[in-house]
Amino acid sequence: MATRRHFLHTASLATASLILGLPAVKSMAKENFTSRRPAPPDRNFTSEAVESTIRRVRKDIKSEELAWLFENCFPNTLDTTVRTGTRAGKPDTFVITGDIDAMWLRDSSAQVWPYLPLAKQDKKLRTLLQGVIHRQAACILLDPYANAFYADATKVSEWKDDETTMKPGVHERKWEVDSLCYPIRLAYGYWKATGDTSPFDAEWQSAMQLVLQTFREQQRKTDRGPYKFGRRTSWQTDTLAGGGYGNPVHPVGLICSMFRPSDDATQYAFLIPSNLFAAVSLRQLAELFGQLKQAPAFAADCVALAQEVENAARQHAQAEHLRYGRIYAYEADGFGNQSFMDDANVPSLLALPYLGAVAVSDPVYQATRRLVLSPDNPYFYRGKAAEGVGGPHVGAGQIWPLGIIMRALTSQDAAEIQQCLTWLRTTHAGTGFMHESFDQDNPSKFSRKWFAWANTLFGELILKVHANQPHLLQA
Image (cartoon, rainbow, N blue to C red; front, side, top):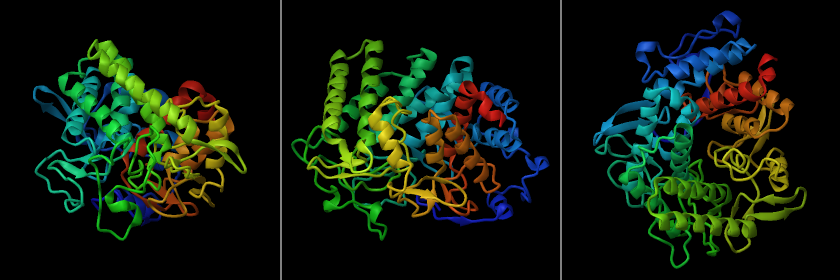
């Protein structure tokens, strides 16, 4: 399917391999852990720094199966999803999500994020990352309200009949605050990792000014802004209420996000994880512009909006829960309505420390975390195969590896991290890769056989554990 919504594949270990076009896996015997990567000539991009990291880390992982998963997953974005070239004399990198031939601003940022620490020592990899930054700037300038784009502007979107302002080159136009946060996170992370400011040219700076303008528009202080969206569908979360503007909000300084990072419609438009992420991103953007010694007034405006969002979040993003005390809400509307849940897609409440939005020791975060990882979160599932956070995107009982990985990345408990590694190792259905989701009782029922974000994030987790708690990889 070409759409983002993918329904479950039912597959035994053998048929899961056939789906991927790989040799059948009859068992997980040691001798069957052969690489699932494309042959070297068939890989889209090869980084010697990445290959060296795989060799170095793999030898320190005792479980052959876990080591095999790391070798398959960590380079998956480079192996299969990047397309490099030049545009207007600059590096240009288009990054598809995997089994959908389109580039999401969120996914593309997250897919290459774990390679940043290696960029300083690998010029080719550095150029590839510059190309992602350039391409994202061009996408934002095309349409800051779109979430996904095509490499070929002449390609006709399957969503061309959506009731919104579709433009050539846009795959889908779901307004999500995090879509504009992730490119800032990538640019800032690239600069911190390399010290290189060359990607931040006039085009990039124009795109960032448009980001600030869009955030301001979607505070909806004087009107509902220029964005509206409708889709003729039987799937409730694929379209917006309120004539395409979503449910009403009371303007309090927070930014409306009409869709979640799952691409599902919000119930209340002030999506709290995305707003807290936006505050972090705006401060990063201000620091970057300060480094460039460009537009000091713009940098000050970024800081001012970040402060406004943080102040509003303190008032509207927290509440007293009957069981957990003071916690973060998932969504709010400024009228006093809030929802208490979490979704596996990032930004999430669980991921707030990972994104730099709160300290992991923050007592409000820890109370929120206890709710998120309990049956009091309506999208937390516990089954025979594993437990973890899912979401409405693919339905009840479906656990997302993204949620398990993020649980481990934000955990301070070695036993919890070890358990997450075990769940990830035992739920890939013999494919050697992470999936979008899997059935809580039967991992051979999974969605999205090729989902590069989850694969690369798994690699990031293994690298973090290897650096900080290597003994966990010896279990």
